Image (cartoon, rainbow over all chains, first blue to last red; front, side):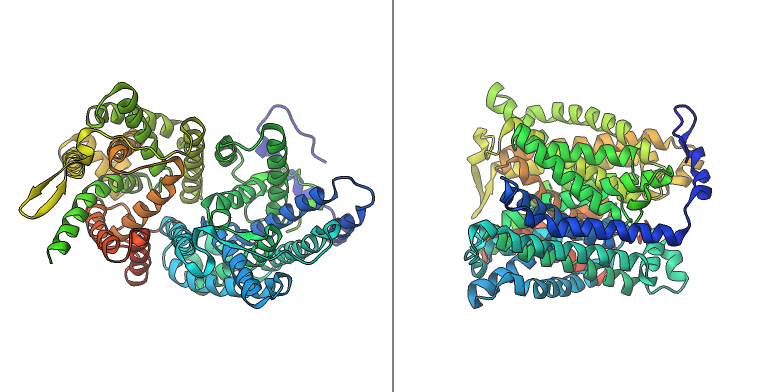
Length: 346
Length: 291
């Protein structure tokens, strides 16, 4: 193990790590065991009902954290691997919520059943949006994602079918109050695990390799024979799936849909902040970032109350991380060779 | 027909102001490849300055405008020096600048909401509600003054870029940063000045907003989305494109306001953006950028 040096440039320690690495196969097994343990704990949390006094609150916190994990892991496919920053990704979150909401209100279909379908809908919308917005690169792409979000929010504000700016109220789920949060918790858990697995699959596939090549130098990638356009659109569509799924579940959990909850750019900002803090382009980064920001947010709100200063803090943290740790927690730790093996999910 | 001409007149007056707002944004992109997502937030900061100067001290927005521009110029130059040199060499410079200005926008919005609350504000100098007639057409005085001021400032910007040594430097940097550096342009200094000018233009726009449109802190997202759509339409980094894009879209959105409803007028900008992306992704006057 390399000891942290107080003086001396840290980048010199980098190469040393190569030699201290554990045999990959045992390393891999260790990580699998760790992942299984985490999953087991997450699965068993709802069974704590007789033992904890703040049961629903705890589950609600879990629901929120898992929801963000699903969204950040999805955003990371496009924003992390491919390097195409979408500042309007909560558009899919909202549209997922509204799709399931409409199906519930008009046809009585439970969002637990239609969540996956809502994801398919948002993935399709993502495909179309990708075909248009991915005609440009860099800044113009980012601009068009913002425009897409504001356009959708404008439509939702003025569309009577979805209640305009008043939104829609959804019927309450028919579940005893004590257990009310349990199905939501498990639904979010499934979505979060699915999104992380999707991220992992993408990372380890040829697609992921191509996407990273695009992030590094799109022109070179193109010259190397990668159909960049098609793969970028594919990445966009994939990254639109799970936000739609969790949007459907979240809307049902809230029991109401309002444009100001789903379609404000602040939601996208949270996504970006979490991934940047955790580490863009890594599997664990979005998970760590989401958990950290949700926890900090909760502490801030319980300690200081919810004020306008919260978004100031969001902005300050974003800038500080970009200036001093542009690789995020996971990326910085890995660069210094101090990333614990259990967090190295790539 | 008369109604149509009236709407077009109002649209053109509005377009003058939009052009001023967009000019700072596109200048910044042209010189530094920075998409300043905080541009509209800074416009609103300036709008609050003008509003409070009028409300508390009875200073007309047109009088406070030059002072606001100076303050914003200095603030912008300082902000540039504080934040940007650090990330200049980054391989992901483009993304970093966008995320950074995204953060700045939230900081500005949060501080405005905290100190000035979310109430709608608008300064009401005497000319804000006046209008005069030319033939059978109405011309609102405030709009006329505002677009007059915009034209003066835009001509000033044009003159600065075309007839001063620093202006040459700015244009050279816009064309090719590395080449400009080779021929002896102090790119760092040019960038600082350009950032300052971009902010000063945001400041001037804000002073005009203070009496033209009711505003509140979170309003800036709508403004920035409109302005960004407009400069993509004109071609990122092209001042000519920004001005022409502003005039076209302001007229188009006025027509939409008149015939469809004011709620849908921002839609004009977004649809124009997606249309231009489909037809000509580099915009009307844009070069193809590689970033």
